[in-house]
Every structure is written in C-alpha cells, then in structure tokens.
Amino acid sequence: MNIVSRIGVLRAVLAFVAISIVVMSQFTGDRAVYEGWRMVPTLIVPAIVPIVFFVLLLDMLMSGVFMADAEGEGKKKFKFIIMMDLVFVLGVATLWFPYFYSIANR
Image 1 (cartoon, rainbow, N blue to C red):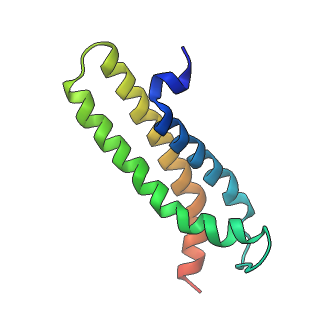
Image 2 (image 1 turned 90 degrees about the horizontal axis):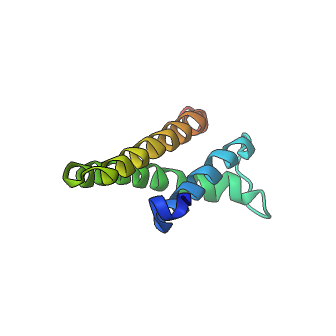
C-alpha cells in the first residue's frame, strides 16, 4: 500500500517539509546571511520551523481525536500517523533547539 494514499496528500507534504527542515538544520551556521541561497537555511527555514512544529503537534492532536471514533483499520491508521508525527516533532525539536538556544543567548 502506498504511504501517500495511506496517510493522505497533505500529511505527506507535511512530512516532506518536516524532513526538509531536519536536513536544513545542518546548514544553519553561526550567523545570518542576507543574500543568495545561504539566506534559505539561515533566515527562511528558521522562520518556518515553529510553524511546522506546531502544525505537527496539531496533527497529532487531531489524529487522536479521530482515532477515538475510529475502529479497526482506522485506529491503526491514526496510531501510525501519531507515531510518524511524534518522530518528526522530536527530530525537529532536537536538531533545531541548539540553533534557537544560541540565538536566545547572544
């Protein structure tokens, strides 16, 4: 069974964005760059990180709500989605915490 058809297109896009954010955390550097492609990992992605983080948490919450009414295969689907979102939340939080911590302590 195709993963996109199992979790849905919007969740697949959210997962792709979360994976991209996790990968981009390796290219942040120690200072902001205001021109060129280096602007993406130093300015644009850090602005998107909190939004994606909270959207993942909201998706976990809503999947839990839908799981309460689901039965059988639907329950398995929502458990899988919650676990997938949890992995992405932990990945985003773990890899981006040092960057935001260093900004807060400058």
